[in-house]
Length: 265
Length: 265
DNA sequence: CGCGCTCTTGAGATTTATCAATGTCCGTGG
DNA sequence: CCACGGACATTGATAAATCTCAAGAGCGCG
Image 1 (cartoon, rainbow over the protein chains, first blue to last red):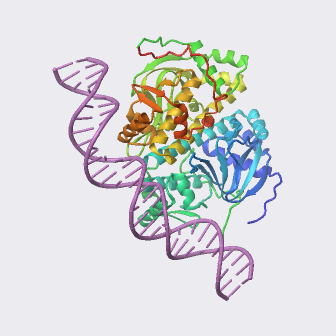
Image 2 (image 1 turned 180 degrees about the horizontal axis):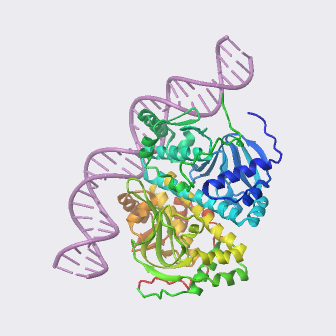
Image 3 (image 1 turned 90 degrees about the horizontal axis):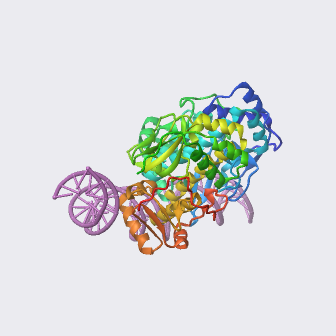
């Protein structure tokens, strides 16, 4: 893994915001200019490391540059529920702008690079650009819509359909973010992690995974998700991407050069 | 049921906002004055009736004055998942301010009275009072935190613990909103509705309910929730109200006279 | 009085969990 | 270069939680 300078990286951070907000709305030139002025610092996180813990009062917003982050809680009996998985280009902790105290944890599922942007920086830009404020607010609401979909998925669907649904969401988001290659994308998480996303047992995840693999719809192995038959997968999952509120579901921007692509040769 | 005038009801609507926002933050006198200027109109909704449907583009925000609302989706196989339950004093559809298209449905679980406030009215107040904007944003984030907790509950907990958890949340929120009487509150929903909250079968809900009743911790009958042993219930549920982000968990305002209390004599 | 909605009960099927062991891959240190 | 350890994946056998189907009971309301 190459060493990242932990100094300020204005351009990179602004571009991530611009790209992400453009996926769910429209930015004016002035908005973009303001966003490019955002400053913060980049650092790397090891798998298993936490950025914020329950009860913390973060002063920064996090941006994922590479790797994979998780938002999770531990239930009373010590079981982990993963609430979200964040891929490069995502902005995990926007809601900390207006909720002071973390009611969950933010950590890394894989070695990752992130940028941290002070709240004050974002407040500065938002008060200058009402439209940016509206879109960042919308971003938090889209994340809320995803929570609802996950609730439906985990509560109402059978294991194989749940899993297919999760894979559909991941590949759709990866394509929108420009971090997919065809119908594949990096998904550096273990079967145990997947179990804690879906609320299943690792053993059952393993067996379900083999069923999906046999159906030739999708494969999840070696930290990579490969969708072999998108139509079949979507049907298994009953997947409708509307809840992601992407401006255009078919959107597929050119590869995101500003993201630190984690290539394993 | 008494007939409500469907004319503008400035005072009532403003007071609901003031009370709700004061539960999760601080309003200045100027904020309150501005909120009292909100206008909208009141109407009643029958059980089973929908206010907004998937795909709609609402122009109003809804405020619950009496009864009980649900937010729900139908899964691919036609199963209903209830994502939220809204009691008097709650503001179900705030997120429609910045998400144009509904990705779920908003309907009534019981005959209810609601007020509808045009988006333009809220935008007017929010642009005059940044603090009101921040608190309304926070309100949407708190709703997101509740989604996360429901995800954890439905994915990780056993039926009886899930149910205890839901009841804990309801009584806590009812107390905070001032619509509880001691350790009881109105909860006008059926066992089938409860099943679609918890992602269980109505049959299993019925059996689990009897277990809880026998444990003498809680009773849910005749549209009323009665918590007999709060400590035992909370322990069963592993309940920690932190995710509700109430300013003070022990807060118990005087009975909300401005809410149209639905009294069944 | 009877109909519809909700609640209750029973018996058996299905899904998923649990426990425990084995297998595989890979990096590290001797 | 090989042995070892650790993390992750796979397998088998059994148990537990929950679902399905089906029928009956209670009760409010027209």
